[in-house]
Image (cartoon, rainbow, N blue to C red; front, top):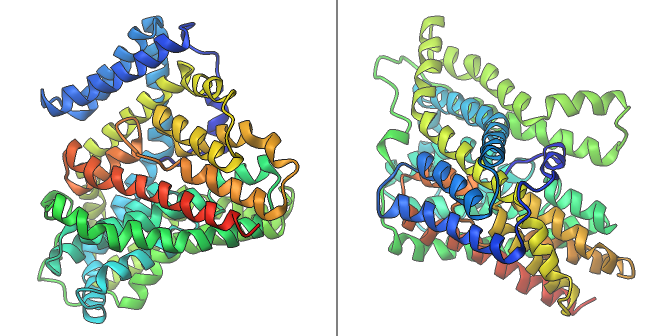
Length: 465
C-alpha cells in the first residue's frame, strides 16, 4: 500500500539500473525478498537494516552497478519519507494531543458506551470506511490508530478483532473507490465513467469489507492473539486535568482533515478546471499535508486549550509525540527504498512482457497483471496504473459498466498479498507490534481476501452486463 501521487509515479519511469534478462531479474527478486525474510525472522536483524541489505542484494543478483542500486534505494527512501513521513509525524502529534487532553478517552468511552462487544468490529469497519473514503491509506492509519489501540485496551478486545476491520475499511476504499489516485488514473486510462465506477465500486466494496473485516477478524484474532503494544497506546492524561474536550469537539477535530480532503475531491470532480480559483484553493487546503497540519493547529485549541494546557505543555506534548515514531519512519522509508529498487530494476516491465501473450478474459487479465506487479513492486498505485495501461486497448469497445468493472478488477488485483516490499506492510507491523510472521497471517491474508473476494463480485456483476 502506498500514498504515491501521480507526479511521484512519473519519477518511477526511469531507465532500468540493470540490463539483466527476465530470468535473472526474477531470480534476483526472489533472492532479495528471501534475504530480507531470513535476516528478520532467523537472524533477528532490525527491519531497517534488513531492508537496506536486501535492496543491495537484489541489485547485486540482478547485475546492477552498486552505485545505481544505492541511488535507487536512497531515492525511494527519500521520496517515501517525504510523502509519508510528514503525514505520520503530523498524525502522531494529533494522536498525542488526543491522548494527553483526554479527547481520545472521550471518544473511546462514547464508543464503548454505545457499541456492545459483538457490534464493536462492525462499528470500527464503518468508521474506517467513512474516514478512508477521501484519505490515503497511511493518513487513515495515523488518524485511526489511537482510537483502535485505546478501544482494544480499554474494552479488553483482541487487537486483531478491532484492528482488522479498521484496516479492511481503509484498504478497500484505497483500492476500489475514487477519488483515490489509483482508481482515478485507471478511470482515465480506460475511459471509464467516474460515477458508474463509484457506484459499482460501492456495490463491490460493501460485501468485500464485511468478509475481510468483521468476519475474517474472528479467525485473525485466533491466529494472532496479541494485545495492543504499550509503547504505541496513547496514555491516559494525568489526573491533574480539571476538564477534557467534549465528544463533539474531539470528533470534529479528527474529521477535519477528512472533510478538507473530501471537499477537494468533490471540487476536482465537479469543477474539473485546474485554473479555476475555487479548485486552486481546495487543492491546497485539501492536500494531505495541509489538511493534517490544519487539524494539528486546530487541535491545539479544541483539545489542548480546552483541557487547560499552557503553551509550555503544548510544546512538551508535541515533542514527546515524535520520539516513538522514529523507528517506524525509518522502516517505512526503507520499505519504500526496496520498492524503488525493484521498479528501477525493471520488474514492472518484466511482468508486462510475460503478460503480453496471455489469452484470457479482460477482467481476469487486468486482475492478474495487477497482482503480478503488486507482488513484485509492493505498490498498489503502480500496479493499478501499469495494469490499466496494458489493458486499455481492450476497453475501447466495452460498454460503460464493463469499462467500470475493468477499473475495479485492476484495483482489486493491486491489493493482493502485501508483503515485505510494501511500506504499508511495515507500517501495520510496527503500529500493531507484530513480527513478520504475524503480519503475514493477518494483514497480508486480509489484503488477499479483499483482492479475491472483490474479483468474485466483479465477475458476478459482469454477468449482468
